[in-house]
Length: 196
Length: 196
Image 1 (tube, each protein chain N blue to C red):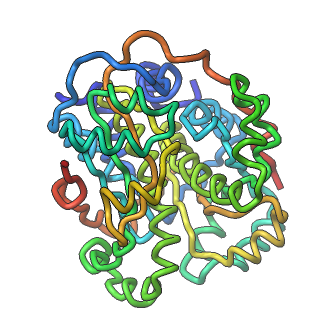
Image 2: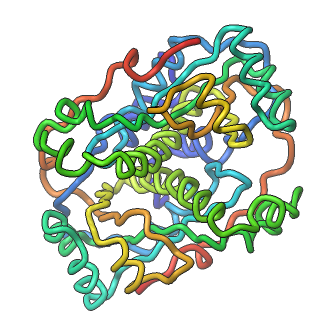
């Protein structure tokens, strides 16, 4: 065993976990999402900027408006998932940096005074946190169905604002039945890793 | 307990894990990195595109060339870490899609025929995988020191090529002593999550 993480946790988070398209009726509670956030919030981002923002779509009315912006293949699962979350990046994250990065409060102005720089940083660090969120969902014993097949501009306009860029939409719940297709292959170690 | 993941694993991956700047002399082996990859490779990306590529900097000569491109504050830790990895995104990942996404092999041409689309997708999905890699490093009982303070253009030119965009550089090893400063605050749940 080269890994310190125990095999059950390896299975829960990585080996047995699958992207899911159909879910059981069991609801996903706010307490569960709070527990997920309270775990994944600790994982690292540059300057501790933590730009991820999460919009939980709970009302029937908002759900229907969101489904209309999903690609056709994503509509049925987005309509039926127990919970749907819009993940976005806050392009004005720098306003929080004096609090979030207290040992160098000047970072706000030294590195992030320009909006394009912030957008770029928020997108990449928001993506890191989206990955931590997916791992967190699995840590809660739930399955995640992350999707990028939707009209990004329409979702931003209808659910967010100019300062929040959509990253992905995630269906969340207990899986019903098997994953929609067998797990696809992964690249071999030597195709991914080189040594210099 | 709202989480299914056991508390020891929560601590190992999130609660107790810290970004580290100084490391013990204990080497990080190829077998350890292989075990990390063999875990994190399963985590999801769009179309299973898995664009992350990892360059392990093992030779003294390559390490010195890399240190020269790091920001001043990152130079000492990058010089002394047991292992340094350059994480990059493969902008030509679509060539692998017929293998990686076998139930829709047309994805290569339908979605990714344009280079700017591929670069964007590789950057975001590469960032997801960088996050999975950091979690994987911790799963191996190691500490990660992810950094974006370096000359991206110079690192791409000297260590990669036009088809590989640097994402971050990660120092890897067993920590020596405490983290360089106390853990910074995180945003409260209500500052991050809204419900509609």
